[in-house]
Length: 141
Image (cartoon, rainbow, N blue to C red):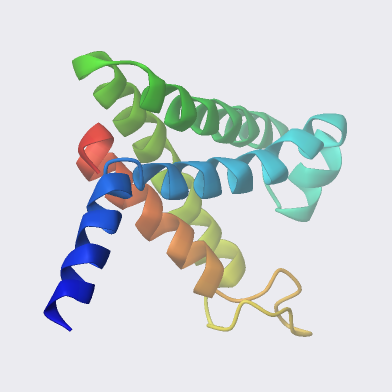
């Protein structure tokens, strides 16, 4: 049995250095799938979120740029890539914190409910924690 676990360990260790891509791609895909469609309807987004138009534009741009930074940072070698990743991830933290507090607070389950048409805080909290992790670890994740 020991040999089985050692073999599995060797297999996992071979890919461990690339595991950060699972978090990067998932986080960036979520950012982009939420931000890119908004560019065609920023007025509606601002109204739905009860935000000034300028804040809606800024939030959308930050989400898009943060997603790109998280992806690009993984390809850039050295300290520059490390900090591109960190800045992209940390840029998303306040956006998610505000979203949780203003749109999702009071319900945990991610499923929509009559009082929470955007769902509860479960999914946004996972996004916030993932962004925080990548912000802390950068390319050393």
